Length: 551
Ligand code: SF4
Ligand code: SF4
Image (cartoon, rainbow, N blue to C red; front, side):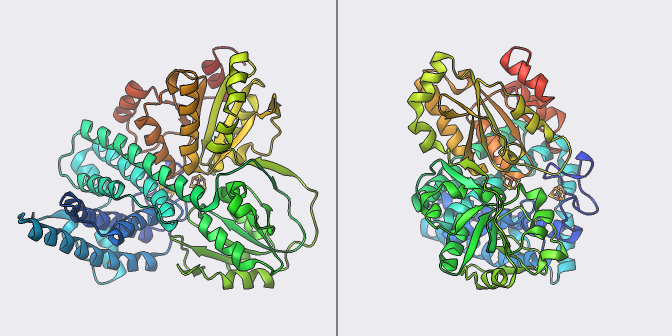
């Protein structure tokens, strides 16, 4: 195996024996093969799209295959093996779609090679051997570190965008143009002799694609559940049976809330599910009682202590401890061997039965709340007040401090940073990195909270809309606003968001706690030259540099 797609990669360079995340070598090799197989499908789907033909089931298969390979999603080699066999069948379907389109338009079909001709081996060992042949190492040997690293930057961005597209399609959102671009990018990645400037251009194009994916997801979530509103969320448990829902998939949460109505079970959110409380369509359920725990990397301790059943939707699952494996369930693309998976029919009866069989909380803990729901609609609803506060000097600067949380040391930077932000500045935050500071009391500036929780990582779309609206109000560009972005990354969705910000021309982003291993010094120089992207240093130094004063 060789995997360096996330921030916690071994020694900052690559996991080679087993993943720090818990992914074994077999699963890693199978995931590499799944990406290869997805490229083969896209080679045909891209050519069919150019001839005006599309099959949405092919598109959805490709994004789900890619999402399967995102960090902390699927650790089950058997399941990935089954997906690989389906991939060969879907590739044949895509090939037929293309060839029929050629026949209809009297075009001569191209004879494709590479991933388009892959045939699955008979067993998992054979599939694994095929995966080893197409790993990053083989491309690194052929192309060198810079070009293969840039390819991985693009693959990571595509994987992140695929995750958002999957959430959006679950709630009925579709856009053939997005899928056409995604297939085109995957096809480009099969070229034998990519050029550095072409790869950089593709990385930015994936940022554009991801912006559209996040826009679609925003439309899906707000269309289904209304615009988030500022909402106080209880972060201490109350007496009673309990279900904990983690991950990002709002549809799963809604189904659980419907299926537990009147059953005497309290439902809690965990991790990235916290922003769900802001949506009127979810908050209307009285038994959605609060949020429990912190970010994903604390789950082993928190799930062991939670006296009910637990659902992991989407990422980020960690190796379950025995103490809770029998009350842990997965849904969507998440899988762990031995953990019960709820299939796409979303019948949560096993989860509900496990909650009823567990003791639940035996007493109320003293009430404590935090406020969420400051997505674009809520913030722009008080835009006049915010603009006035900036003009009067009451608000001096905005900081977007957001992104993934993680387990490695060095992430205290984000807590330190938030704590040291001067009192006349506002912090906007999103994604699970916020758990580093979202229970601190930041107070307000003339009624405007100093900490605005915009939502999940995909709600970076909301952050962009807020920034664009402020820039319009002040008749300047986003880069001219008193706004600085401090982004923490861990996995591929954060890479997709970073590419989106670069596509939008946003400069001076500080990225931490370390830079991705696939960003070589040459590639970093390209990013520095064009976007002045920089690694985080210390909270004190970075704040002083941004504000131009000692803090
Ligand atoms: S996802 Fe991250 S931790 Fe897991 S194997 Fe890959 S680089 Fe290592
Ligand atoms: S923000 Fe990133 S690390 Fe955090 S839960 Fe979401 S996907 Fe995982």
